[in-house]
Length: 180
Image 1 (cartoon, rainbow, N blue to C red):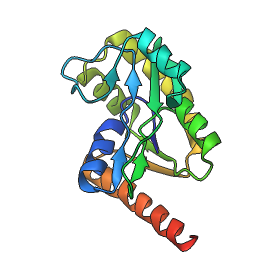
Image 2 (image 1 turned 90 degrees about the horizontal axis):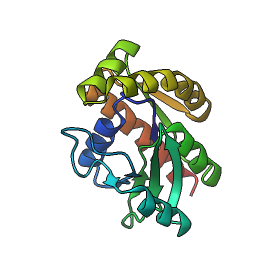
Image 3 (image 1 turned 180 degrees about the horizontal axis):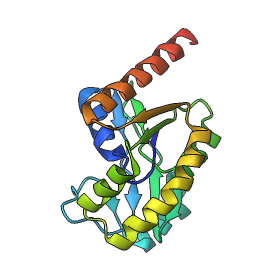
């Protein structure tokens, strides 16, 4: 599970991991927020609030949370056989997943600096007021995430960060095989 504040690069690293490892299945989250300008259509399942609430009522989420007025949730995973599930979620969601699956591998992805974090959010088209809110909330998210995460990776360069996360995943797989 990859967690971290906005602008850490969770989506970029998650997609890179899934592209390089066919045994990783990247879960696609749902959200009620509108797509950002230039955001890929498959970044999320974009839905209205009523559809999201209906999925909650049906028990269709592994976890869900509200963040800055929008709902975000991870559908109950349906990974292909032999694949490990890769979640890219916020700290609220991570807490819910760890409560259900205490053995989940939690990796905190961090931007190299607050300045880089802010620039990344601005460059992806987040409005200035949302960037300010995310920066403010990000400090608390990081504090909480460090209580959950066993590993922390700084995303200063995507290929290197992806390789570091991949090695953590491989070590966890090896440990799981040793214990089975």
